[in-house]
Structure formats: structure tokens, C-alpha cells
Length: 276
Image (tube, rainbow, N blue to C red; front, side, top):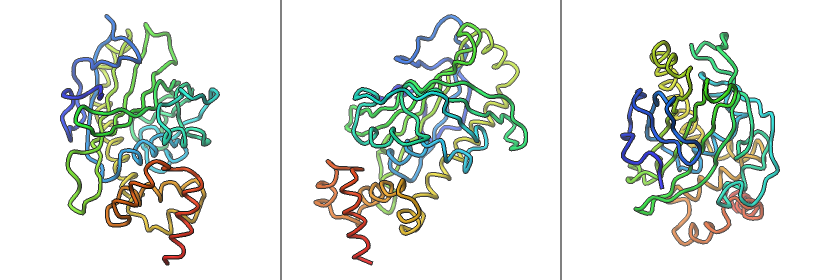
């Protein structure tokens, strides 16, 4: 289930408000101060959205607020690192986030590429799929700030990418993207009083940057997606699976069970080359 269902409106500009729950990642306590939440609609499938966020190597290309991430610790990948095969196919890649990964993020709160505000130490708490009561699929990524003792500062940031109720005009899948950060610790009260406007501008920029990055990738010519690097081939397959008219219903159903597997990607590429 979604952790923010009914709490964040669709296409909501960033706003500060009462703390939103971040269970099961962490309990909100007496020192929990506030949350900043936001949402928008992205013209891409949910899986493609979370893949873009997981791939920290692309952050410099699109993210003004946190343009760089440096992974400092990666735990061994186990069966329970994530809960579905399509995410397991991604988390083994260099630079991709998965549960248990520790990383530092360069924060540019003024959105000035020449002015780094601070470096934040983060711990990824979840990369997972979930289902809504109405049958729609969503993906969730969450991380927690661990750079200071929790009584001083402990923020949890959560992203959910949910299949939109309505398809786009051209029949393609869209995503309802929700994000929020809950601020806790003694420092959070100072952040709310002194930095709330700057935080809101930062999240507004982040939402616009991320939406543009995902949608521009979806609109790229197919040959530019599948040919430059092997790592992008699975994206081409996802694009075909979720864009009606490219494959028929029978073809999509056959491929769902083997999404992102190497042998199917190779077959897909061969068929596509022959079609050209």
C-alpha cells in the first residue's frame, strides 16, 4: 500500500506541514518537527521513474539540488534486498541504490552549481514494489539522513511512483510521483523556522528537474536509447512493453514474466534490428 495515500494531493506544489509518517523506516517521535511534501505527474511508467532515481550516475545530468552522490558502502545483495525481480535486475549495477547502501550527497540548497551547501550522509532504507487496493502498481525508494546523532537531526525522505489512474492521450502509461521528507531532531526546529522557504524552492526545482529528465529519456529516439551502452538496453524493452501499439497485448503478456532478463533483451534487440 502507499504510505501517503490521501495525505498528498496529486500535482501538489511543495508545501510544509505536519509530520507525515515514515513507518516502517522510522518512528516519528517528540522531536519530529514537520514534513515537506510534493507531487506531480510524469509521462513515463513507474518502473522507469524509480530506475532513473536509483541510478546516481545520472544525477549530475539533471539534479540541481543534489547533483552528485558518492556511494560509500554497498552490502551484499540478498534475496530480500528488494521484493521483486525487476528491481533485482537493477540493484546489482554500479552506482544504483538499493537497501543498505550508504552514500553521501552534495547538497546545493541555493541551486547554484558553484556553491555546495553541505554534504549529507544517507542510508537507503527501501527499494521496493507495492500494490494499491485498486490493483495499481507502485514503486518506493526511501533513505534516511545518518550524518548526525538522531536527536540532533534525523530526516527520512520517501519517493513513491504509482501507476496513474488515467493513461495519457496517446495511450501510454503515466506515473503519479509523490515525495516527502520528514524532519526530526533538535535541528529540525531551526530548519523549519530559518530555511523553510529555501527548502520549498529546492524541492520545487527537484520535482521539475526529475520530471523533465525522465520524460526526455522516454522521448529519445529508440536508436539513441539502445545502441550507445549495454546498460540502457533494458530501458528500451520497458519502453516497448508499456507503450501500446509497439507490441500487441499478447506480446506484452508473454514478455511480462521475463522483463529485463538478458536473454529477452538480446532477442528484442535482434528483432528490432531485423524490423529496421
